[in-house]
Amino acid sequence: MRHFPKHLLDFITVDNDSRLSYLQPVHILCIRSVPALGINLPAALIAPEHLPHWLHQQANRIRIKALRMVHHAGIGHTGGDLSSADILSTLYLAILSIDPEEPASPSRDRFIMSKGHCSGAFYSTLAARGFFRASMLDTYMDPLSALNGHPDRNKLPGVEANTGPLGHGLPIGVGCALASRITGIGYRTFVLTGDGELQEGSNWEACMCAANYDLDTLTVIVDQNRIQQGDFTEKTIRMDPLPEKFRAFGFATEEIDGHNHAALLTRFRSLPIEPGKPSCIIANTVKGKGVSFAENKPEWHHGVPNAEQLSAAIAELSVILENSDEVSA
Image 1 (tube, helix red, strand yellow):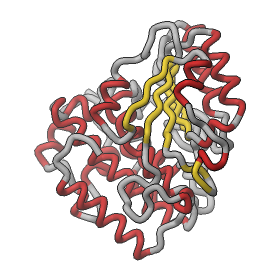
Image 2: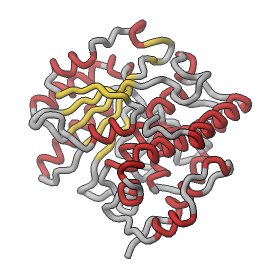
Image 3: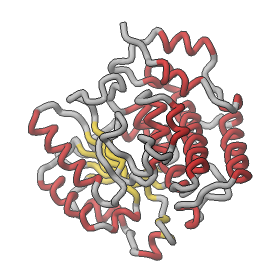
C-alpha cells in the first residue's frame, strides 16, 4: 500500500515557528494510514464541516512561506502571492485530481498558473501538496535553484507550463482542454489569471476559441485584486464590467469571494457552471490579503518585506492561525 510521502508530512507538521503547527501526532497516524493515490488530503482526513477552516489555515501557512521566500530572495511579487493563496490552497488540497507520485499521469487534472510571477505562493502550494520537499523553498531564486522567479516545467514536478510573460496561460489551457476532448481522457483544466493580465489580447483570442469549441472542461479563475504593477487596474486600463465581457465571449460566469473557502469549495465542486460552455470564476480578492500594511497597496505588487516587516506579517498571520474560528479567511 502506498502512503503519503514523508516530505508532505514535513510540510504539514514541521516549521521553525511552533505557532504554525496545526496537526497533532494523532493526525499524523491517520495520514500514514491513508493511501495517497487518488485521495485529496483534506477531503480524506478533515470532516466536511471543518474543511473550510482547515483550508484557511493552510492558506496562511502558504502566505507565510511565500513571504519568507521573497524576503530571502530580495525580489518577488508579495501582493499577488497573498491574494491568490486561498484559491491555490482550495484547488490543490481539496479539488484537483492529481498524484504527486505520478505528476505526469495522463489522466491528471491540469492547472496552469498563468500569473506565473506569483511563484512564491505557487511553489509553497506545490510543496504543500507533496510535489517536492518544503526545504527546497529555502532556495527560492538562488543561483541554479529549480525554483526560478517564474515556473519552469522542465525543473519542477507539478508545473504544467512555463509562465510569467502574461497572457500565455489561458491559450495553453485551451490547448489542454482540446487535448482532453481529442484523447477522450476527460481531465479538467484550470487556469488562474490576474485581472491586470487580462489586458493582454491573447486572452480574448483564447476565450473565443474556448467558446467556439464548447470547452466545458475548462475553468478560468480570475484573481481580481484590482491592482497591477504601478497602480490600480481601473486607473491603467479599465476592466469593468468584467463579468459581462466574459459572458459576451461565451463563458458561463460567476463572481465569488476569493477568500471564502466555503464558497470556493462549493463552486469548484459544481463545474461546469453551465454544461456546454467554458466557465469563468471571477474571484474578488484583496491584494496583500492577511497582512494589514500590504493590503490594497499598489506598491506591494512587487514589494519585498524587510526583516521587521516579515516578523510583523508572520505574527499577524500566526494570530489568524491561532485564533480564527470562522470557516473562511
